[in-house]
Amino acid sequence: MRLAFLGTPDFAVAALARLVQAGHDIACVYSQPPAPRGRGQVLKPSPVHAFAEAHGLVVRTPASMRDPVEIAAFKALGLDAAAVVAFGQILPAEVLEAPRLGSFNLHGSLLPRWRGAAPIQRAIMAGDPVTGVQVMRMTEGLDEGPVLATATLRIGPLDTAGSLHDRMAAAGAELLADTLAAVARGEAKETPQLAEGVTYAKKIRGREARIDWERPGEVVDCKIRGLSPFPGAWFEAPSDKGPVRVKALLSRFEPGAEGAPGELLDDELLVACGDAAVRLLRVQREGKGPQDAEVFLRGFPLKRGARLG
Image (cartoon, rainbow, N blue to C red; front, side, top):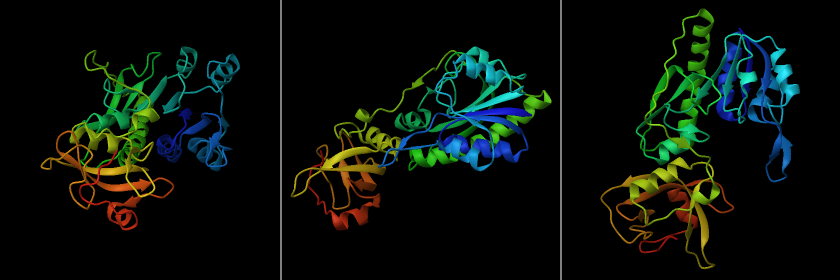
């Protein structure tokens, strides 16, 4: 088919690569405009933009797909379908309806649960045992369209947003390619989303990232894993020079341990919570790289009885 692909982050790259591999005619790739990145705040293209350019694909980076010039350019592509994966803009009806067969979105949750911007993180933070990827026909409502295909993934006790992201991106790439093939053959079946069970995955805000050790251990564990690797849930550790900010990047829930919230219950980063505890397995001291707990403790020893803030 003749396709347009609209996507921006790493999550979308696998899907674009799979559609290229499948032999589709990618008429144009749309992505968010280059943004300041890194310490130097140099303008850099998005991961999708960079991949598309490296593979000789035409790229457009409009500030808004509601611009009449962009709408006209999109309509002029003569598309069979549009594939959308974490593009980052709400698309108007004129864009969604321009392709002959419609516009299709790959979404990282089991709809109608976790519509919106951060479904992977929110699923882990909520303690969901399963999640998935789905392909839906796009409508003007936020992630409200009928579903054409689903792949379900279990969320493991040591899954982080990063590890789950990678598994979902791979599964989603295959699902999108298979679904578009079914659409081309006229064999795709659409199922309306349920009206019950709607939840919204709000964008992750930095102010959410501080760990509250008064919360139950299960909640703290899910928050740590859901915010890893970015922005990273953090706490303050005591030192001779005052509190030091440390990110917790991986943890394990420990149901049998008890103590005052924030208290270290051993010399290996077992931390008491409002009830039960979590063991910190991977952390990142401010200004340093990520480290496994035992490596971190060799350079920054924290003993039983110390209190984390």
